[in-house]
Image 1 (cartoon, rainbow, N blue to C red):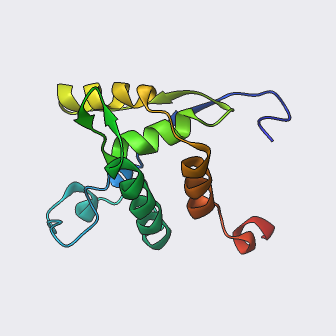
Image 2: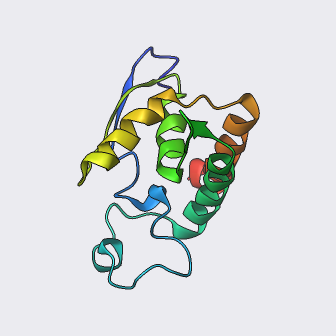
Image 3: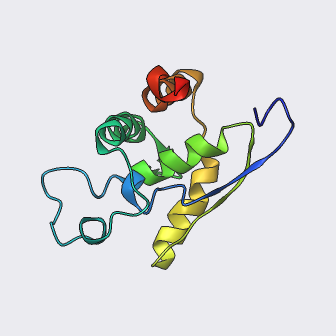
Length: 130
């Protein structure tokens, strides 16, 4: 709809409160983390885990200026590849987080990588029909 109406989208909380950074997924995640205490914004963890898995696979094969790319950078880059997205609003606690977020704009995703991310993140048809 945004494309057909020629309307841009500014994305707030593009990493879903840090969830899409991948740091809250996996066996080594502390039960004392921020999202365990206050799960905001709420996410569908089952779907989110699948999205993070694909983003990890993509990140593992990429570098920026010789430095490895992380899951958060792939999430931000994917958003920046979407035609309606004009800007994203990022937040960072530390300067290196801000640097990583800004560097996401340098990542180029292939058509296959974009298709994989689109496929795994697409809402199920039952959700759209309701």
